[in-house]
Length: 229
Length: 229
Image 1: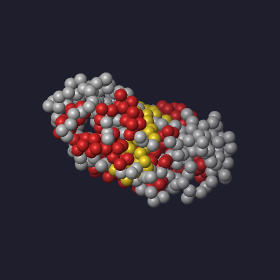
Image 2 (image 1 turned 45 degrees about the vertical axis):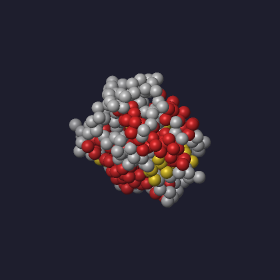
Image 3 (image 1 turned 120 degrees about the vertical axis):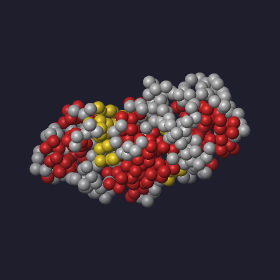
Image 4 (image 1 turned 135 degrees about the vertical axis):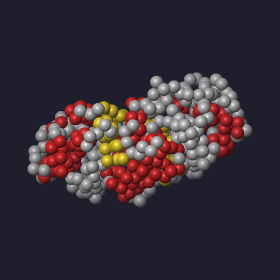
């Protein structure tokens, strides 16, 4: 079986991705990051979701990107805003170079275990403000990995970064994931880390809208559940 | 003053680099990594050398690349070998994707503080076995950073990765650094973390040879100091 490294946060996209990579026949090595984000809920959910999905191995990498903050997700002095719907703004939840850091580390693990396939659950259509969710970045990063690893340069084992949801909307992902058996009640998307999802941050609102568009009910508990926000 | 992020390990190359970047007129933000390497000596030396060089800020980023090892530097089950002189082999001290991980994180800090210049002290001539020390990788990584950060894509503030030693030999670096006031007795290159440098690992032997070629004596204490090894 071919091995795949799958970036996994315990969220809707990346949990769907675990199942998708398994469906494609890969042996899945999930990797999650404790990068100083606001809450541990994401990490606990990631561990649990990876276990339920039956991955071969799951690594948690700790890295203190909160040493400089620069984002509402890593700097407790910046509040997570409620949903604004303004897609042209750079979201304050943007974490500088986050996907680049994650993909680099995934390549490191991949090279160590002989996995040439890396999966990332980004979508270009959902979040236009995040430049590191775009196809142009994914291709540039794949080139960098293939120039910067011995296995690619010297041993003819190039890496491929797979971003199968890049042109999909979240409702399409939900429909796919539901077919593959994902229990979305065991995933977590909220930027706030309370017992129940807030229902008002960008991430919650986009998720609620996507479930509505998919014609389904989100099984997750919300404090406020109103997709019309 | 323009800000520069300088990758800094406390070694000969990167300490020279701190002084070189300052000489070029940059305000220097040094970044070091605790990535599970064999010993803390490197980190203590890095802190001390950054302080002596008078950098504006110094960050230590912890990241557990030893979660998968794959290198004699991050896996205590793999011994650091003595110098072999075989440049065609992939060194067992190669850490998968290390410079890519470091540069990604440097870009994250750079974006957070508005620094567009990143300095890395790699040399293509010294270590042909390390593919992530080659110009081709540096250029690919610069492209990835410029595709994956908001400041580069949306705000017309592209990054430049400077690798000023890429075509220099270590003896040339030593001559440069000596002119700039580097105290090489306060740097550390040995892969082993004992009180005195071993003098027999790849890193020690290349350093000793370089001092000899530069017509100088290495002020560092060695257990065995024999550049003819």
